[in-house]
Image 1 (tube, rainbow, N blue to C red):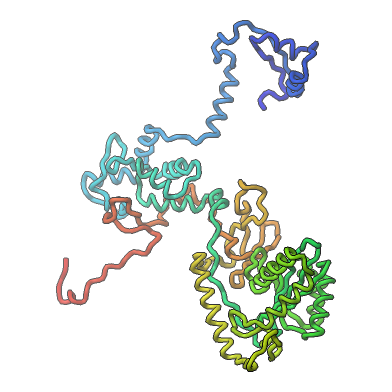
Image 2 (cartoon, rainbow, N blue to C red):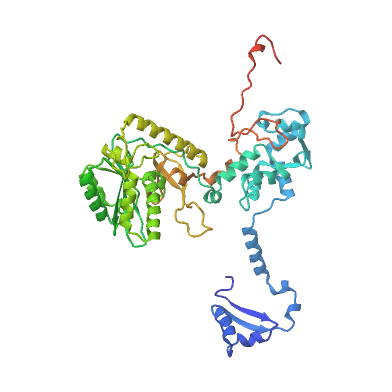
Length: 506
């Protein structure tokens, strides 16, 4: 890169190279590739006997050496020398106050971070020490933190590394703030924990709220359109060859002509479900069309669970070589007359108010009590919610409207791609765990809170990383009784016991 566009001379003590790269060269194919690689440069090659005996430094002029040295200086972090610590300590007002306080034992309120450790402080050649650790002057603390974060270690590694050599009040809090505001660490960090599961309220009656999805494509190129009633769990499935919006509307017309119009239809965000044609159809027939959060299939969990069962049936049908349509019809009839694991009542009974005739006789017809079914549904859902939240470590998200967040990259290019997009987005709306964000170029996206992380701006590092925001000290190992706790926790208030109310205590 330094030689492009320049006329330069190549010195070599390997004489055959002069012939290979000369104008009258007749190289073999291997050597010809070498020549082709060098064609973008303007050079001449000169044979110098015993060139390897010449010291390397003499082959560089002073200007080239200065350029190389400046590149090295710019691209590596500058280490802090002891002389620089001495110079900054002399100019640091805080250290000068501590020097005076060590002599007259008069500790100003501005030195409250040092007071718990005053018996461990001493001055050696203008450098303040706490035992065998250097107390870094205020002006160098941000630089020390940046040097300790080279390689992007975690906060615990940084703390262990710094505690060996240096110290200042609120060091742990400053390290945590640096790690929290490092943009690169935020982009490749862990995703947020999912929020606690929100139990969907059972609809008021059958065929009020439906969920729809496509299963496929199957090996034959066909798809299965699945429709689930969220009250009775009754399933309707249709085999189709195409999945366009017009095909969806055609199948919905046929199903609704037999079973009636629902009030709500929930789908994912596929193009055939979010098209203007389907929206217009739902508006014309008074159906509220809702969509789940993108890349969050559990929001439409009832139909996704049915897809898994249907897929198992299709695999068995493929294994036995039976007809796909016949296997699907057998499964749907079996499912309709089998008591559901949540409601305890067959879906067909809740849907139509009667039991479908089974292949074997029953003594009496089943009586359905809506109140008992709802109580059982609520109990089972609550137990499932508790188990799931405990399994995934769910916790409430603190993301709110106006926050800047990093959005998870749903289509990473390779294994080394960062899990989060580099450009922060702004939260403009939140409904439960579904958040709408807007990027700087005006594009809006809907995401679950588990796909978003709070973004911490890095511009606070230079000035505020050791500021008075953190007013308490995190005790180090072995110093648990020395000084107050970190500013990330509230101060414990010492209250006098009631039995000492009649006494004057010092």
